[in-house]
Amino acid sequence: MVLTNEKIEAKVIKVIDDKKIVINKGIADNVAKGQRFQIYYLGEEILDPDTQESLGKLEIICGEAIVEHPQEKMSTLVSDLFRLVPRKITRNGLYPFVANVEETTDTKETIPFENITNECLARRIR
Image (cartoon, rainbow, N blue to C red; front, side, top):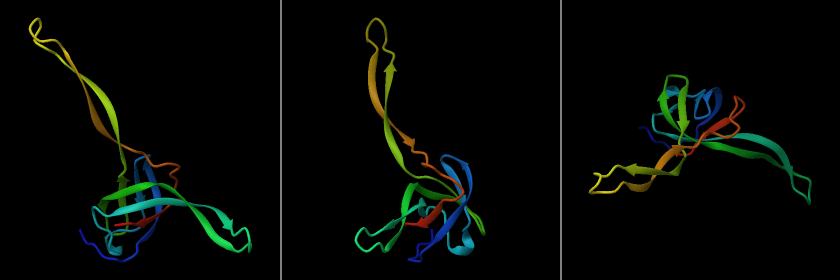
């Protein structure tokens, strides 16, 4: 994986589903497999309450993603945020000698992007 300090900003050009997107930057723009991006869109313009000067547009975070498949001029990214979901597992015992045993284990579940559209932007964060 090529890591540089170069700033990479891109646009979401296709939403495949709520966990997979395509951006308009690729290998030609130094995008490499495994790089992480923050996905966001621009919200309303915020004004300073005292001076009425524009402070810029509010960035609304949709999620974070990792480059799964870079191509020459575009790349496929997948959601890279997870949550642990508790799941109960019952292990069958050897009746009548050993009773069934219930265990709780955590499973990683991918968190989908929030409010993802083709109007979203992406910036490399690592």
